[in-house]
Image 1: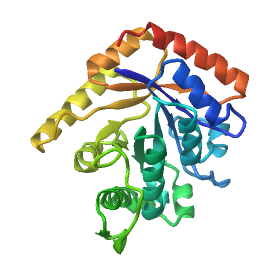
Image 2 (image 1 turned 135 degrees about the horizontal axis):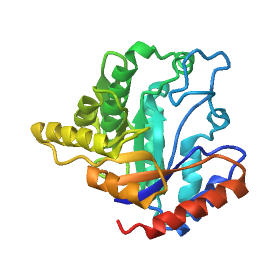
Image 3 (image 1 turned 90 degrees about the horizontal axis):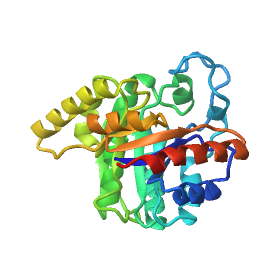
Amino acid sequence: MDLGLAHFQTDYGIPPAELGRLVEERGFESLFLPEHTHIPVSRDTPYPAGGELPREYSHTLDPFVALAAAAATTERLRIGTGVCLVIERDPIITAKEVATLDHISGGRFLFGVGAGWNREEMRNHGTDPETRFRRMRESVEAMKAIWTQEEAEYHGRIIDFDPIWSWPKPVQKPHPPVLVGGLGERVYDRVVAYGDEWIPNRVQSPEQLGERIAELQRRAGAAGRAPIPVTVFGAKPDVGLLERLRDAGVTRALFYLSAGEPPEEQRELDELAEVAAAWDG
């Protein structure tokens, strides 16, 4: 099981180029950044984790720009979105950003996608919250067409375009892995239908997660697919818990690096690196 970091990259924290270098030097396999284009001031949607929405949500850097900076100062570190809110994005532009980032990083990009939770944020982008999961599927399918076809076209209920030319194509073939986020019961269908991996968030029990991973693999097998890798957000810095996650079938665990001022972030990063160094896989 690989170990990586998930981090809200902000305008007041460690700059992304420096963070990428620090994370790679400490032996982590990957760095994942989330996405929120903005946070509406008048917000009725409750924060899923409860309580007040943390400050970093309204201070996040654009993940593609920040990950490009991290890629430029690293050689081995895998870089990923955790997750990209594709329902708030134009799929043609996003397909080019993904392919460009995979190109300049030498094929190190992991494309985590999700439908989000903040309904006001969605509506500001013209997205109907009631159809966000259909939009997510159509967006991913449309981007896969752009990445793999010389003259790509897509005709869905929401996403629709006639044949187009778009380069570069991704380094990874047929395209960077698509990690589908979510915890609901329908997530199995989404991962098997158009995902390469599953990336659940806010997992409380490794054993319960293991039951869900077993069900996912059963459905993957029924669909003629190989076992599907699973990346978990928010792993605690505890070797015993990491062993339980590995036994549950997790293939990548991401420690959450708290957002803060640079000295605070580097101290926590060093503490997490000590746990990673003690992990024997």
